[in-house]
Length: 148
Image 1 (cartoon, rainbow, N blue to C red):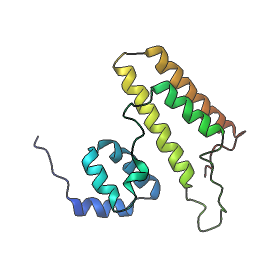
Image 2 (image 1 turned 45 degrees about the vertical axis):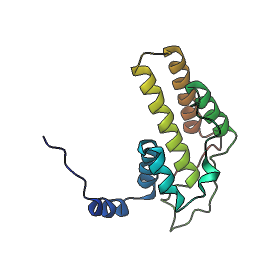
Image 3 (image 1 turned 180 degrees about the vertical axis):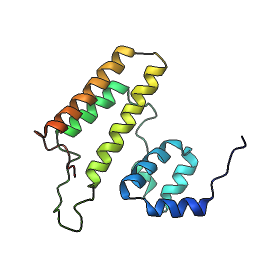
């Protein structure tokens, strides 16, 4: 089967029909797929690139990244209160969207590392940490994020 080319105009139209949650997640994945040179060009029109330059080239270890995510979650860094009314009751806060994107990215890293069969004990601890956060959200005892 030949590789089908994506029609950019049809893609733009389809994206505009989607809700913010889908767009947020799509952009989060795109950030990982875009090469550095093109990423700089993309953000230059919207953000100051100097504000988002890396402090170092080394990627944070999986467990350290998950533990930092847990700490930020429990500290309420993703929590974003907003006045719910009849017009916005179905919207998801940006803090919740960011939490879900970070959670998905960390789960994807866990899966990737598990598939390589490296550091499986670390992967298990990372999964356990993320699942414990999900349990806390499910229990509703902490203000980690706002769910609709």
